[in-house]
Image (cartoon, rainbow, N blue to C red; front, side, top):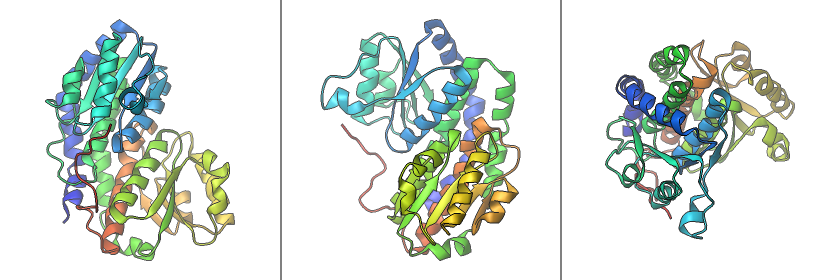
Length: 345
């Protein structure tokens, strides 16, 4: 078993530990946020952490009524003319906490008198040092270059912070079910070698998700790019229909993330358009109708709260990406030209 597969299987344990050991810290940070009453939230991140930030845009917008924007770190590092962060909640999300551009945004936030929070797997990192508050991921060492357990832990940390900020016992109870749901998704999709064999020579994929799982589309596409070296483009159905859908024709592979929730009907309607174009559908869903229409179905466990579905729905995508890499003769533990820690300016 590859290192990345081992770490995928560690995710239920990581999420259980994060919830058990990190709740008090999340509630402490939430109390400081309520005291400061920021007008908006700015998140600095790169790579998989940037995809976690996309989740936060829906999460804090829907549940905490807090506008969330993604930082533009190069404005602070390359141009030296970053925007004012006065009145913001400034959050840095980084597995290693070592990328200078992410650190620079939090440093700017502190200079502007804003509340700053680091979400990182390395509590002794430069990012943690730059922040006023730190929410550690507690994921343990992640050796595979492709992030998996630190990604879902980042989603979990953001979900905990949102639940703590709202003060909802019901949301904490739903968080308590996540580890079991992730484990079920792993077990259901453990053997994918036959399912991916058809796509061993594919060079292009489109990955589609909407709402909370817009982030999931980006993360699955990233995993496919970095482990199989193919072109995988993430979209929401709405954006895809505004032009890029023209590239989809007969046998073009499209992976759709479609868990139950408010956007399921919209995503299912988009599948109709894929059928009209005779595209190849790979579906991650708990909806039997969507799975029945797919050439390849990757089932999700039932009854996932929509706001937590990205923590579960990404897991079949992680397993899909690893299995696809293996069938294409790639080593998913050692993507060419990549290293575990990427430091950008």
